[in-house]
Amino acid sequence: MVPVKSYAERLQEQLNEIEQKMMELLDASSISHFHNDPDSYVVFIAPTHYWGETDEKQKRLQMEILKVYKPWIEHVRLLFLGATDEVAEQINETDTFVTHWLQKESSWDVPGSIEEAKAVFSRQIQSFVELLQMLESPKQRRIIVVPDTNALVSCPDFANYQRVAGQPDFTLIIMPTVLSELDQLKITARDNGLREKVKSVTTRIKGLRAQGSLIEGVIINKAVTVRMEAREPDFGHTLSWLDSGNNDDKVIASILELQRQEPSAVVILSTGDINLQNKAEMAQIAFVEPPGGRNG
Image 1 (cartoon, rainbow, N blue to C red):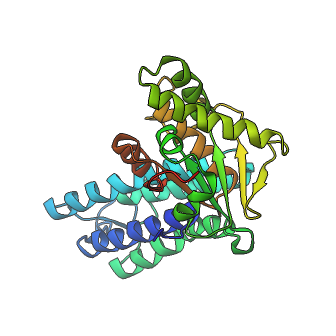
Image 2 (cartoon, rainbow, N blue to C red):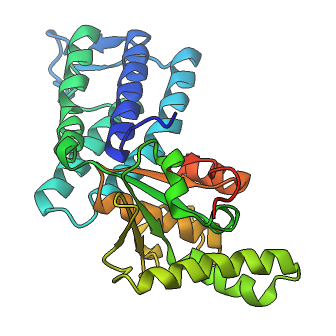
């Protein structure tokens, strides 16, 4: 059973994780108080409160939080790429606050107690919560399935992907990298059986063109919309670790762009490729094995 969670929902779950870990870090922390010597003629201008010494437990918690927070904030920035200046500033300010508090840097905003610090942190990250909630549109939610090349070769019947979607009505999108790989396999595949399977897929795709525009989407079986994405992914605006020369990374980058366009949609990559599954997991993309066998 596919967990029906959107990109925005998964980021919200991770934010909850980050907040819980941060509460644990704060509980393990201490706050010291600075007082000027009333008998001294020298007055120091400094914050009234500052973080106490960081012990090994706190350092471990800091590392655990950073491991989750760094990729999380990269996804948030990617998701809101092209948003208003006000939203961008809101993200920057909250990110700066979280980073400073996570690293326990001295500043004027350190409160007088740990309980107060916990309340301040929860209040500050509420801006992230509100931004993610703003993207949720349950009434417009839809299931999108993106098969990789091997999935289409093993299961060329588009309607069969309802097993991946978990429901009869869904949208299946074929990415440009997948189309390119199919065209290449028709020529370079040494195995005759493989070439025939590839031809079967491309024949089905060409057959759909007779029914309408695949760029806009063609409906089959009265419930499944098959669409082709013509644009290559923009590697100037994607996750930093993706390589534009790697076809798996191109598929991942294309799905990320799709998720950014429809953050409330449930986007599922259908692949049996272990390496691609690993990359999908790193990129916050849901994946499911392709439907077994061929049907038609």
